[in-house]
Image (cartoon, rainbow, N blue to C red; front, side, top):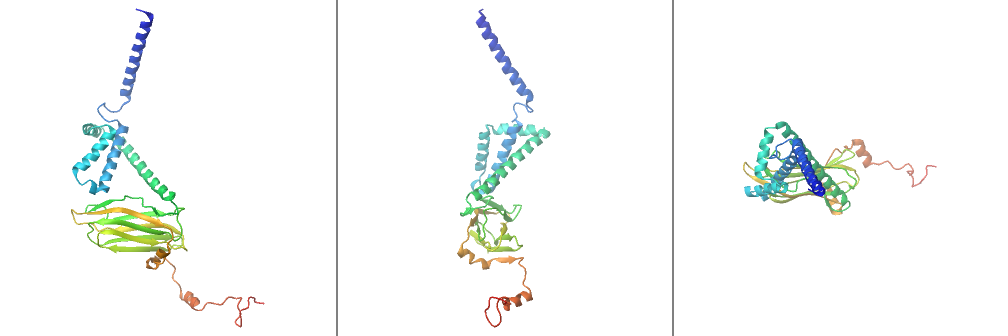
Amino acid sequence: MSADFRKRRHRQIGLRLTAALAISAAAACSRVPSYVIEPDDMALLLADIHTGEGVVDQNYSSFRTDSAKLALKAGIYKRHGVTQEQVDTSLMWYGHNLELYGEVYDKTIEILEKRLSEVRSTAASAAMAVAGDSVDVWNGAKHLTVAGTSPSEFLTFALDYDENWEPGDVYSWKFKTLNNSGNLTMSVFVDYADGVTEQSYSTTSADGWHTVQLTTDTLREARRIYGVSRLSIPHRGGFMYLDSISLTRNRKNPAAYAQRFRQRKYGEPRKTEKDAEINKNPEPPRAFKAEGLKISDN
Protein backbone atom coordinates (compact mmCIF):
# COMPACT_ATOMS: atom_id res chain seq x y z
CA MET A 1 0.00 0.00 0.00
CA SER A 2 1.58 3.27 -1.09
CA ALA A 3 2.13 6.25 1.21
CA ASP A 4 -0.13 8.49 -0.94
CA PHE A 5 -2.97 6.01 -0.73
CA ARG A 6 -2.69 5.81 3.05
CA LYS A 7 -2.73 9.61 3.31
CA ARG A 8 -5.88 9.85 1.18
CA ARG A 9 -7.50 7.11 3.21
CA HIS A 10 -6.72 8.83 6.49
CA ARG A 11 -8.02 12.13 5.12
CA GLN A 12 -11.35 10.53 4.12
CA ILE A 13 -11.74 8.89 7.51
CA GLY A 14 -10.99 12.22 9.19
CA LEU A 15 -13.60 14.05 7.15
CA ARG A 16 -16.24 11.44 7.94
CA LEU A 17 -15.48 11.65 11.65
CA THR A 18 -15.71 15.45 11.54
CA ALA A 19 -19.10 15.31 9.78
CA ALA A 20 -20.40 12.74 12.25
CA LEU A 21 -19.28 14.84 15.21
CA ALA A 22 -20.93 17.94 13.72
CA ILE A 23 -24.21 16.08 13.25
CA SER A 24 -24.04 14.71 16.79
CA ALA A 25 -23.34 18.18 18.19
CA ALA A 26 -26.25 19.69 16.30
CA ALA A 27 -28.57 16.97 17.55
CA ALA A 28 -27.33 17.50 21.10
CA CYS A 29 -27.95 21.27 20.88
CA SER A 30 -31.49 20.88 19.52
CA ARG A 31 -34.22 21.12 22.15
CA VAL A 32 -36.81 19.26 20.11
CA PRO A 33 -36.96 15.86 18.37
CA SER A 34 -36.03 15.67 14.70
CA TYR A 35 -39.67 15.34 13.63
CA VAL A 36 -40.66 18.61 15.38
CA ILE A 37 -40.29 22.05 13.80
CA GLU A 38 -37.50 24.01 15.51
CA PRO A 39 -38.62 26.75 17.97
CA ASP A 40 -37.42 29.73 15.90
CA ASP A 41 -38.93 28.28 12.72
CA MET A 42 -42.15 27.49 14.57
CA ALA A 43 -42.41 31.05 15.89
CA LEU A 44 -42.03 32.48 12.40
CA LEU A 45 -44.57 30.00 11.01
CA LEU A 46 -47.12 30.88 13.70
CA ALA A 47 -46.59 34.60 13.02
CA ASP A 48 -47.35 34.03 9.33
CA ILE A 49 -50.41 31.95 10.21
CA HIS A 50 -51.75 34.74 12.44
CA THR A 51 -51.03 37.30 9.72
CA GLY A 52 -52.91 35.13 7.25
CA GLU A 53 -55.89 34.93 9.61
CA GLY A 54 -55.86 38.72 9.81
CA VAL A 55 -55.93 38.94 6.03
CA VAL A 56 -58.98 36.66 5.97
CA ASP A 57 -60.76 38.74 8.64
CA GLN A 58 -60.10 42.00 6.79
CA ASN A 59 -60.96 40.63 3.34
CA TYR A 60 -63.94 38.40 4.02
CA SER A 61 -65.36 38.86 0.52
CA SER A 62 -62.23 37.25 -0.95
CA PHE A 63 -62.21 34.33 1.50
CA ARG A 64 -65.85 33.37 1.87
CA THR A 65 -65.29 29.69 1.11
CA ASP A 66 -63.34 27.14 3.11
CA SER A 67 -61.34 26.23 0.00
CA ALA A 68 -60.05 29.80 -0.30
CA LYS A 69 -58.97 29.81 3.35
CA LEU A 70 -57.31 26.42 2.99
CA ALA A 71 -55.46 27.59 -0.12
CA LEU A 72 -54.06 30.56 1.82
CA LYS A 73 -52.86 28.30 4.65
CA ALA A 74 -51.38 25.82 2.15
CA GLY A 75 -49.42 28.70 0.61
CA ILE A 76 -48.01 29.60 4.03
CA TYR A 77 -46.96 25.99 4.65
CA LYS A 78 -45.32 25.78 1.23
CA ARG A 79 -43.37 28.95 1.89
CA HIS A 80 -41.98 27.41 5.07
CA GLY A 81 -41.36 24.02 3.47
CA VAL A 82 -43.61 22.09 5.85
CA THR A 83 -46.74 19.97 5.54
CA GLN A 84 -50.00 19.99 7.46
CA GLU A 85 -48.93 16.73 9.10
CA GLN A 86 -45.64 18.22 10.30
CA VAL A 87 -47.40 21.25 11.72
CA ASP A 88 -50.01 19.14 13.53
CA THR A 89 -47.33 16.80 14.93
CA SER A 90 -45.22 19.73 16.09
CA LEU A 91 -48.16 21.48 17.75
CA MET A 92 -49.05 18.26 19.56
CA TRP A 93 -45.46 17.91 20.82
CA TYR A 94 -45.29 21.55 21.96
CA GLY A 95 -48.65 21.05 23.68
CA HIS A 96 -46.95 18.48 25.93
CA ASN A 97 -43.94 20.78 26.48
CA LEU A 98 -45.65 23.98 27.55
CA GLU A 99 -42.56 25.77 28.86
CA LEU A 100 -40.92 25.66 25.45
CA TYR A 101 -44.23 26.40 23.75
CA GLY A 102 -44.50 29.57 25.86
CA GLU A 103 -41.06 30.64 24.63
CA VAL A 104 -42.16 30.01 21.04
CA TYR A 105 -45.28 32.14 21.45
CA ASP A 106 -43.33 34.95 23.11
CA LYS A 107 -41.12 34.98 20.02
CA THR A 108 -44.22 34.93 17.79
CA ILE A 109 -45.62 37.99 19.56
CA GLU A 110 -42.29 39.80 19.15
CA ILE A 111 -42.35 39.10 15.40
CA LEU A 112 -45.93 40.35 15.04
CA GLU A 113 -45.26 43.49 17.08
CA LYS A 114 -42.19 44.25 14.98
CA ARG A 115 -44.19 43.84 11.77
CA LEU A 116 -46.93 46.14 13.08
CA SER A 117 -44.35 48.75 14.06
CA GLU A 118 -42.76 48.57 10.60
CA VAL A 119 -46.16 48.99 8.90
CA ARG A 120 -46.96 52.06 10.99
CA SER A 121 -43.51 53.51 10.35
CA THR A 122 -43.88 52.92 6.61
CA ALA A 123 -47.31 54.57 6.58
CA ALA A 124 -46.00 57.60 8.45
CA SER A 125 -42.97 57.85 6.16
CA ALA A 126 -45.17 57.62 3.09
CA ALA A 127 -47.32 60.45 4.38
CA MET A 128 -44.28 62.63 5.01
CA ALA A 129 -42.65 61.77 1.69
CA VAL A 130 -45.35 63.59 -0.26
CA ALA A 131 -45.58 66.63 1.96
CA GLY A 132 -47.35 69.47 0.24
CA ASP A 133 -49.39 67.24 -2.07
CA SER A 134 -52.68 65.44 -1.76
CA VAL A 135 -51.93 62.34 0.33
CA ASP A 136 -53.84 59.47 1.90
CA VAL A 137 -52.75 59.44 5.56
CA TRP A 138 -55.01 56.55 6.60
CA ASN A 139 -52.85 54.03 8.46
CA GLY A 140 -55.42 51.34 9.23
CA ALA A 141 -56.97 48.48 7.28
CA LYS A 142 -58.44 49.49 3.93
CA HIS A 143 -61.24 46.90 4.14
CA LEU A 144 -63.37 45.75 7.07
CA THR A 145 -66.10 43.20 7.69
CA VAL A 146 -68.47 43.92 10.59
CA ALA A 147 -70.84 41.38 12.10
CA GLY A 148 -73.12 41.14 15.10
CA THR A 149 -70.34 39.30 16.90
CA SER A 150 -67.72 42.02 16.22
CA PRO A 151 -66.09 43.40 19.39
CA SER A 152 -66.94 47.03 18.59
CA GLU A 153 -69.38 49.08 16.56
CA PHE A 154 -66.97 52.00 16.20
CA LEU A 155 -64.31 52.74 13.57
CA THR A 156 -61.76 55.29 14.80
CA PHE A 157 -58.47 56.98 13.92
CA ALA A 158 -56.16 59.60 15.44
CA LEU A 159 -53.25 61.61 14.04
CA ASP A 160 -50.87 63.74 16.10
CA TYR A 161 -49.20 66.86 14.73
CA ASP A 162 -46.26 66.45 12.38
CA GLU A 163 -44.10 68.90 10.48
CA ASN A 164 -46.13 68.57 7.27
CA TRP A 165 -49.33 70.03 8.71
CA GLU A 166 -50.31 73.49 7.53
CA PRO A 167 -53.12 75.85 8.60
CA GLY A 168 -56.15 75.42 6.38
CA ASP A 169 -55.46 71.75 5.56
CA VAL A 170 -58.55 69.83 4.43
CA TYR A 171 -59.17 66.27 5.65
CA SER A 172 -61.65 64.02 3.84
CA TRP A 173 -62.59 60.70 5.47
CA LYS A 174 -64.19 58.36 2.94
CA PHE A 175 -65.30 54.75 2.58
CA LYS A 176 -67.86 52.62 0.77
CA THR A 177 -70.40 50.40 2.54
CA LEU A 178 -72.37 47.36 1.50
CA ASN A 179 -75.31 45.97 3.49
CA ASN A 180 -75.61 48.98 5.78
CA SER A 181 -78.68 48.25 7.92
CA GLY A 182 -79.31 51.55 9.73
CA ASN A 183 -78.01 55.01 10.57
CA LEU A 184 -74.25 55.34 10.09
CA THR A 185 -72.56 58.40 11.57
CA MET A 186 -69.15 59.89 10.77
CA SER A 187 -67.35 62.65 12.69
CA VAL A 188 -63.92 64.22 12.24
CA PHE A 189 -62.47 66.49 14.94
CA VAL A 190 -59.51 68.83 15.21
CA ASP A 191 -57.98 70.01 18.49
CA TYR A 192 -56.18 73.35 18.38
CA ALA A 193 -53.33 74.56 20.57
CA ASP A 194 -55.58 77.21 22.19
CA GLY A 195 -58.02 74.59 23.50
CA VAL A 196 -60.67 74.99 20.80
CA THR A 197 -62.10 71.88 19.08
CA GLU A 198 -63.97 71.76 15.78
CA GLN A 199 -66.15 68.94 14.45
CA SER A 200 -67.49 68.02 11.04
CA TYR A 201 -70.38 65.56 11.07
CA SER A 202 -72.29 63.36 8.64
CA THR A 203 -75.00 60.70 8.91
CA THR A 204 -76.60 58.34 6.41
CA SER A 205 -78.71 55.20 6.22
CA ALA A 206 -77.88 54.23 2.63
CA ASP A 207 -75.26 52.03 1.02
CA GLY A 208 -72.50 53.38 -1.21
CA TRP A 209 -69.87 56.05 -0.74
CA HIS A 210 -69.78 58.13 2.46
CA THR A 211 -67.58 61.17 3.05
CA VAL A 212 -67.09 63.70 5.82
CA GLN A 213 -64.77 66.67 5.30
CA LEU A 214 -63.11 68.93 7.84
CA THR A 215 -61.19 72.12 7.06
CA THR A 216 -58.76 73.40 9.68
CA ASP A 217 -58.62 77.05 10.73
CA THR A 218 -55.95 79.14 9.01
CA LEU A 219 -55.53 81.24 12.16
CA ARG A 220 -55.11 78.39 14.63
CA GLU A 221 -52.46 75.72 15.17
CA ALA A 222 -53.89 72.21 14.83
CA ARG A 223 -52.43 69.69 17.27
CA ARG A 224 -54.53 66.56 16.69
CA ILE A 225 -56.91 65.19 14.05
CA TYR A 226 -59.17 62.30 14.99
CA GLY A 227 -62.42 60.70 13.92
CA VAL A 228 -65.08 58.19 14.87
CA SER A 229 -67.76 56.42 12.87
CA ARG A 230 -70.57 54.52 14.54
CA LEU A 231 -71.36 51.61 12.28
CA SER A 232 -74.76 50.03 11.92
CA ILE A 233 -74.13 46.50 13.16
CA PRO A 234 -76.18 44.00 11.13
CA HIS A 235 -78.63 41.65 12.76
CA ARG A 236 -77.38 38.28 14.00
CA GLY A 237 -75.93 36.32 11.12
CA GLY A 238 -75.54 39.35 8.84
CA PHE A 239 -72.45 41.19 7.67
CA MET A 240 -71.62 44.78 6.76
CA TYR A 241 -68.65 45.52 4.50
CA LEU A 242 -66.47 48.65 4.42
CA ASP A 243 -64.24 49.09 1.40
CA SER A 244 -61.60 51.56 0.18
CA ILE A 245 -61.23 53.38 3.50
CA SER A 246 -59.14 56.55 3.09
CA LEU A 247 -58.27 59.78 4.88
CA THR A 248 -57.06 62.30 2.32
CA ARG A 249 -55.27 65.49 3.28
CA ASN A 250 -55.26 68.39 0.83
CA ARG A 251 -53.86 71.88 1.16
CA LYS A 252 -56.04 74.92 1.72
CA ASN A 253 -58.94 75.11 -0.73
CA PRO A 254 -60.95 78.37 -0.91
CA ALA A 255 -64.12 76.49 -1.86
CA ALA A 256 -63.76 74.10 1.08
CA TYR A 257 -62.81 76.91 3.45
CA ALA A 258 -66.02 78.73 2.59
CA GLN A 259 -67.94 75.76 4.04
CA ARG A 260 -66.30 75.95 7.47
CA PHE A 261 -69.40 77.63 8.89
CA ARG A 262 -71.03 74.17 8.85
CA GLN A 263 -68.49 72.84 11.37
CA ARG A 264 -69.30 72.83 15.06
CA LYS A 265 -66.93 74.58 17.44
CA TYR A 266 -66.31 73.79 21.11
CA GLY A 267 -64.20 75.37 23.83
CA GLU A 268 -64.04 78.88 22.42
CA PRO A 269 -64.23 81.49 25.23
CA ARG A 270 -67.63 83.16 25.42
CA LYS A 271 -67.76 86.91 24.96
CA THR A 272 -68.84 88.85 28.03
CA GLU A 273 -71.34 91.73 28.05
CA LYS A 274 -68.39 94.10 28.35
CA ASP A 275 -66.81 92.59 25.21
CA ALA A 276 -70.09 93.00 23.37
CA GLU A 277 -70.37 96.66 24.48
CA ILE A 278 -66.82 97.38 23.37
CA ASN A 279 -67.54 95.83 20.01
CA LYS A 280 -70.62 98.03 19.61
CA ASN A 281 -68.90 101.24 20.75
CA PRO A 282 -65.16 100.87 20.26
CA GLU A 283 -62.99 103.53 21.90
CA PRO A 284 -61.29 105.75 19.30
CA PRO A 285 -57.50 105.59 19.16
CA ARG A 286 -55.73 108.02 21.48
CA ALA A 287 -54.07 109.72 18.53
CA PHE A 288 -57.46 110.98 17.25
CA LYS A 289 -58.97 114.10 18.86
CA ALA A 290 -62.71 114.52 18.99
CA GLU A 291 -62.50 117.72 16.96
CA GLY A 292 -60.41 116.29 14.17
CA LEU A 293 -58.06 113.62 12.84
CA LYS A 294 -54.81 114.75 14.43
CA ILE A 295 -52.02 112.22 14.66
CA SER A 296 -50.45 113.68 17.78
CA ASP A 297 -51.51 114.40 21.35
CA ASN A 298 -49.34 117.56 21.43
